[in-house]
Length: 516
Image 1 (tube, rainbow, N blue to C red):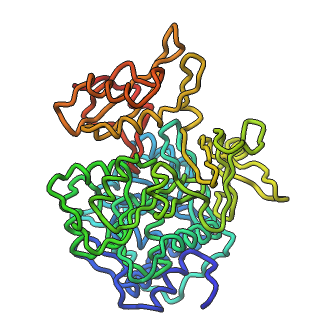
Image 2: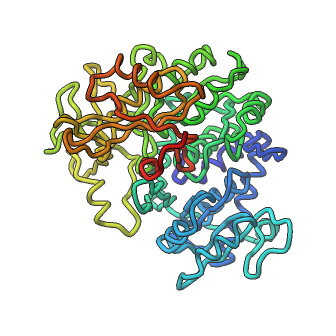
Image 3: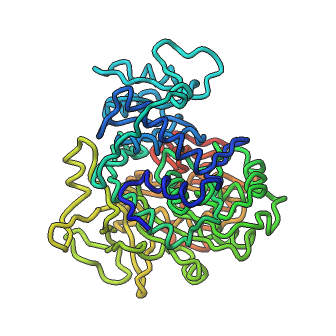
């Protein structure tokens, strides 16, 4: 088997191995690997004919549709760098991203074409806007996606080198301006291989892709599927879980990647019975820590299904996973380092902490980002010298502890730790207890300044049971937490603000008030 040097070669290899195998399912559209491969070639040639060359950035601003999957491979096949952006991104954030990565082309959908053009209007060299799925005439200056696919070019585009950048993907911006994370082909090949290994992915897998392809967790469903020749079932959102699960059942889905919000919605479907997805083989979670109560609920609803608790971040895609056979013993652990990588927990001086002590997690391996696009200062803070000569390690900014067997436990972001009576308190511990309270669907805990104690804790709660009141929640907390960790106030919300990847935006929770 030839060595894979670039990400787009996964598609070529899978097309050669199974030309008629279904690669993508998007509503009523089914693309075989041969069709996806040929379409990527045609679009790559069309991009090259419009001036896209090695190293150029091409933004992919699309929903989870087959054109997005094809676009990613086409951009790479043109030797360029793809920049996935979620269409729900605000206008000012989109303008910031386009101004930062200065793309040659924006591949989008007709319904987003005007917004893309407006966001790019101030650039010295505005990109070509290419729009798919037009139902009427496109705005002036906007090219049709389908017309690029229909063009005929005599020669195949020459691909680049293994060391090239494959992607610039922007952080969610939940704590400030998003940064462009530079990922090389070598890093994407390394981490996709690691993921495929521990999930035991193969051509027989059918993976549900409801998480945005514009975010790391969702994107790697596509990359791993193409690597192993699996089928990817695209869904645009989880707003109607009944419909999505019905599609998953009809397609024989074997892999279900989710985030805590999705888990809460699934567990809230009272009519959903065990065995509802008979072909399901595994469930994964990576975007945010899955509360142990949700893990237990999923285990009851999907008996025999392997559940993988994972930890990752944009700068390295994945860092750790918990083998499912350890789940019962360590339900709140995110496991150990993924295959081919290393992790360590360091104190403020850069030394390893003792077992059970809290410190910052650092990650080492071939899957790390190259740095932040045009931000040397932020790169130097995140990527620092590792023990191995010439190597660098990623400082995650996340606090962890490890047990005597080396299994990792997420404690919280360094910025989230609250000092109460001089003691450091991790909101996540309180959130875990809240999620175990009957009638609580979601919860987020934060510190509020207090003139006597320094800070006290408040909690924002989304109820599954509308009759649940704050007194019942506080009694539950008092039974399961030390006094200083019991929230002083419960604020009921209809929903918690989230990024498109499913992460709660803590900053927005603090800015909004009680919603009873």
